[in-house]
Length: 252
Image 1 (tube, rainbow, N blue to C red):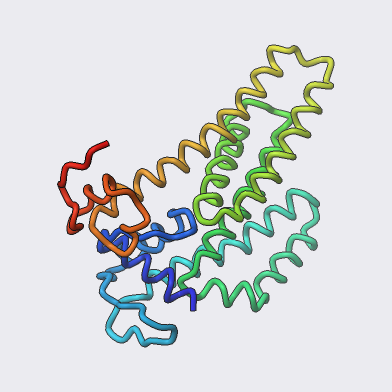
Image 2: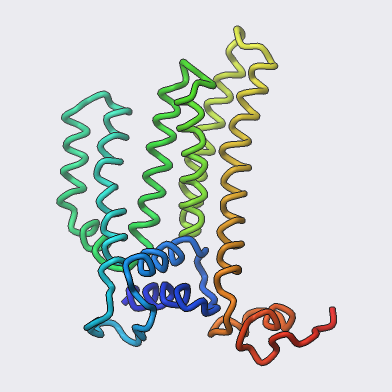
């Protein structure tokens, strides 16, 4: 059912047709990009679930989602290995995900779920890896994992607002971390300020900048009139090619 929904939105991006949806744009943009790069021309109508694709090249879009879904297994393995330092526990976690019917089912269709889970688990893995670098702050690996956590948070929020929960998780972890540093009497206030500034930059400023950039790309790509026109003002509609108000002067 949802493949009909999100596959159609991927086609909208390829055809540059403006539409409106309740979710942020990143997931659908990535689906559209995967289709475009794999040779899909955006002409399949996606009218009802179960329609045959026939000569339309849909493999790239499904393959992209399947690839991101398959990344969940190594992500889970590495996260548990880092947390528990136990190889059997990490292997058990990986095997549980490999043979999970729900995970396999969600990952084989054109859906937002594997993309969302990829960024969610990426954020958790990056957070755990960053925590493991606590004994060498401001090193290259520490900056890398902290920045990657911020990128993953932006990705999770950019696919669905459910990504807010992983933002909350990382936020609580950061507060705990900073509280611990504040209680360290051997750490100067200047050094604590540097720790605070690094987290503000990587976990607040960077995700917000990336999240805003997603919408900038979204509006730049979708420049043709489509089913989402009516949700926006006349002034906005006048910028869309093919709209009745295109290039009409709209008073403020």
